[in-house]
Structures are given as structure tokens and as C-alpha cells.
Length: 64
Length: 401
Ligand SMILES: Cc1cc2nc3c(=O)[nH]c(=O)nc-3n(C[C@H](O)[C@H](O)[C@H](O)COP(=O)(O)OP(=O)(O)OC[C@H]3O[C@@H](n4cnc5c(N)ncnc54)[C@H](O)[C@@H]3O)c2cc1C
Ligand code: SF4
Image 1 (cartoon, rainbow over the protein chains, first blue to last red):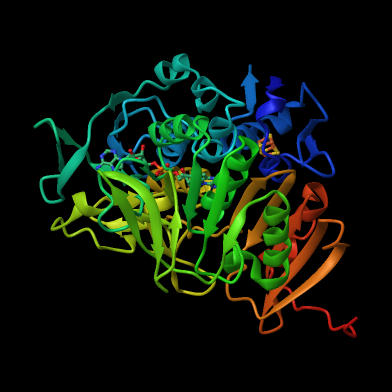
Image 2 (image 1 turned 180 degrees about the horizontal axis):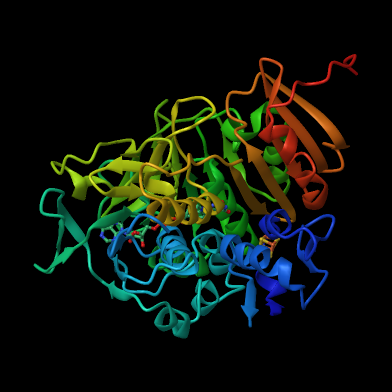
């Protein structure tokens, strides 16, 4: 799985961190997403899909 | 899967909530047919940027797309855009469309959202705007390019954001709100007055505690706003931001319970094979057993996914929808974020940062229990307080400063 992020569109909602805390974090002030692992492990994949689905700004793209 | 599940799902409303239902169904393995009906002619797009990046001109409309066009083909859905549902026959399980067509279903999801409320007598009056669709935003943006004196009626999120953008574009702006502060309903007095000060520093004239009575016109064009107390404010353009109302009229007479939205049980099920998600859904909050309806972007995505899962589980095994509401607002260089329900809180305590720094986290409580956490420019740290909201934690007693 490969994750790409359109950082410029991120609105800092943090839904991604709630769904996949091992893969995403946020910057302090504006909450813009920080990608910890561009290629997450197999057991994190479902969480990452959940994050992509819930991200309100459609920022996270997942490619297999 | 033990139960056979549905074979024909129809989703009405092609925006955030509808998209989440459709994607959720496919992601959970549903291979049956999906018909997806949307009144707007555009592929699903995002509304929060309408009052922010699109209005300011930072983004063009292609940035609003929720998915790339190819993604919809991959979903394998019969997507019918520019199609408005006008009536439902819940017995025959058919939906009548405005063009005379019919669509069937065995399971229906209502995701028709809300529309902007208008001031009476303003339909078709030139210079009067609302802000709900991409067309609305582009029309307002075009008007703002002429640097009008803009009067914003309503001090909620949309009105306050548009006021900030309009100032940034060099317009003269007056904000009329019936609360004591802009966004005072959601933020309360302390944070509301901080936000009011920020607007004032940026040159917005604020009329608080003022009800707008009527839009004044001259030759069919808006020329001012008359307040309920009789005063008038001159205007070249008026933005009416007084909230939204659910799109449920097409369900009238169908037997599907509607009131303030589609009235669902705790699992977002309304009976008759009909579910609802997003701004249009009113459901029984499993914590309070009270009906609630939430107009937040993340709620639309979360409910859509929950409905997809509940459809596949079947009404008997469906799970109650429970989440911590979340909303954000961007104004000037402030990012305001709210977890939970801050309205009506009887106590506000700043737990990190300060009002003077305009960087803070405040906990809101009712009867000693945390009901919301509000952050200003402290996005990452705020997330840490979400759990206290989820648990309705008891507010720690400390001596007042
Ligand atoms: C200007 C603006 C700014 C916002 N900013 C924020 C923000 O910063 N943060 C936040 O959390 N939320 C924000 N929101 C709220 C957020 O956009 C909504 O919660 C979200 O759009 C709800 O999605 P939905 O799919 O439930 O409904 P909607 O987005 O309202 O979509 C409903 C769709 O159904 C269609 N439809 C309606 N009736 C019919 C019918 N009879 N037949 C067929 N189709 C129909 C409509 O045309 C529409 O496309 C904002 C909203 C606006 C308007
Ligand atoms: S959920 Fe989306 S918008 Fe929110 S912080 Fe993560 S990437 Fe950004």
C-alpha cells in the first residue's frame, strides 16, 4: 500500500490520526497531517482505508 | 454473512454523506446494484471550502472535487446527476424524479442534506446571496470582486467566515447577528468576544444582538437591511447566513417520518427499508435518547459509513450511531475546532493557552460534566481532549483563578 497526501487541502481535522494513529500525526498549531509511514504494514492497511474514507477534505489517497 | 442482505440500494443525494454510503458499501464487500441520484449536475464536491478557499479565490472549483472522475467508474454505480427526487412511494419502493422518470430500490438511503434558509421576500432579489452550493459561492465571489459594502446577516460559522474573506478582498463589511457575539451560540461569551475583537480589528463592523427584519430594495436590487429595531444599514450586497433546513419535502406523504430531518432510530434507520445519513438525518442519540441532527462535514462521512455497515448487517443487527461531533472554522489566521456540543454549556474553563495569545483550549461543561472541547490554533493538542468529551468526564474542581 502506498499513501499520498495533498497537504495543501488538509483542514487539520485529525480524523486520520484517530483512525490510524501509527501512520498519521498532526502539526501542532494548524493540525496539518504528518505522514509517519508512507508504506504502512499490512495490519495497518484497514485503518488507513478508514482514515482515507473519513478524511473530510479528501486529502489521503491510497494505492495498492 | 448469514443474512442475504439487499440487492438493490438507491442513495438519494450525491454529496459527502451519499459518497460515504456508496464507498462504504463497496468497501464492505457489497456487490449488488447501487443507484445514486443527485440533483446537482456536478460530481460530488466539498462544501466547507465554499466559504473559505473558493470564496477568497485561493482555489478554483476543481479543488473541491471529493474524488477524481475515474474513481466513480471504479465504484460501479449508476450515478444519475441532475436528477431531483420529487416523491417517494414507500409501498411500491419507487422514487419519482423531476424529469418524470422512476427509480426503484429495496433499500433506500436519504442523504439529501440541507439548503440555506432565506429571509422572506428575498427570492430573486438581485444582490441577495446565500452560500450553500458552488454556484452560490461563485456568484458571491463575483459580487465581492466589485468591492461592495457587504452586509452579512447571521453570525454563525458561514457568515463569520464569509465576513473574514470579504474583508481580505477589501470589501466594507457589516456583520449583523442576533447573538451577543459572532458565533456566540457555539463559543459562548468569552471566546465569542475574543472572536468579535478579531473581526473588529480586521475592520468588520459588528451589530450584535440585532435581528435583521427585512432586505430593502431599490429597483429590484438590494440596497440595505432594516433591523428589527428600525435602524437601517446601507448595502450593495447582502449575504444571508441564517442556517439551513433539511431537504425532506420530497418524502411528504410517504410514511417515512420527517420533522426536523428524517426521523431515525439510534441506528439511523427510519423504517420501510429507508435509512438516512448526513445533514438531513435526525437520529436518537444513544447517550441521551434525544433526537439530534448535526450539520458537520465529518458527521456526514461517519454516518454514511455507519449506514453502509448497518445496511449490510440488517436492521436487527444494526449498531447505534455514536460519535463525538467535530467541526472546524477558519477565520483570518485562526483555526477554531470544536469537539462535542458546546451550545448551552454552563461553564467554560481555559485549560491551555490564553485568550490574549489567541491560542488556547477550553473545556465546556454542563452540570459539571465536559460536553465540549474548543481549540483555537492548537489543533494537535486539542485532539487529546476528545476522550474527555466522549466520556463526559467530570470537570475537575480547582480554585478559580
Ligand atoms: C459554506 C459552507 C461551509 C461549511 N463549512 C464547514 C466547516 O468548516 N466544517 C464543517 O464541519 N462543516 C462545514 N459545513 C457543513 C458541511 O458542508 C455539511 O455538513 C455537509 O456538506 C453535509 O453533507 P451531506 O451530504 O449530508 O449534505 P449536502 O452537502 O447538503 O448534500 C446533499 C445533496 O443532496 C442533493 N439533494 C437535495 N435534495 C435532493 C433531491 N430531492 N433529489 C436529489 N438530490 C437532492 C443536494 O443537491 C446536495 O447535492 C459547511 C457548509 C457550507 C454550506
Ligand atoms: S483527516 Fe484529512 S483533513 Fe484531517 S488532518 Fe487528517 S488528512 Fe488532514
